[in-house]
Image 1: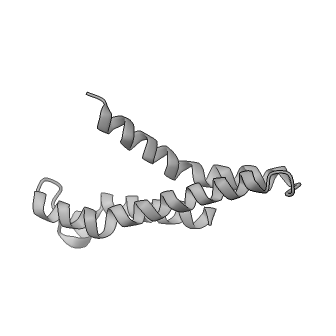
Image 2: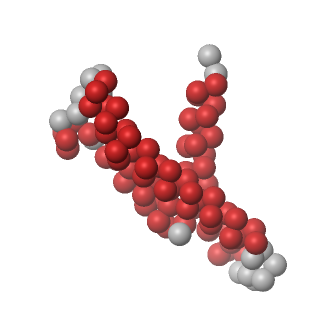
Image 3: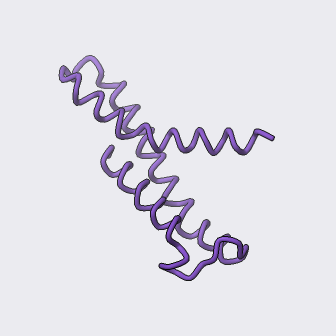
Length: 96
């Protein structure tokens, strides 16, 4: 799940960055941006964030039973980028 979370996040951000050459959607044109964001970008980001929270929850739940510390840290490290982007978006929404 951690690899899926990071992979979906990277693919979504890359497609969002190169949406004009891929789909012809210009960054300043509101109707196309609105449709693109609600049909592709927001669902893929929601899936990545959900998987990230699931990985962290599962890792915390099994913290005592899993003895390999590297496995725990790798799983948490792979899921942190999606949660970090969510935190950044929330901070940007509520700041001036």
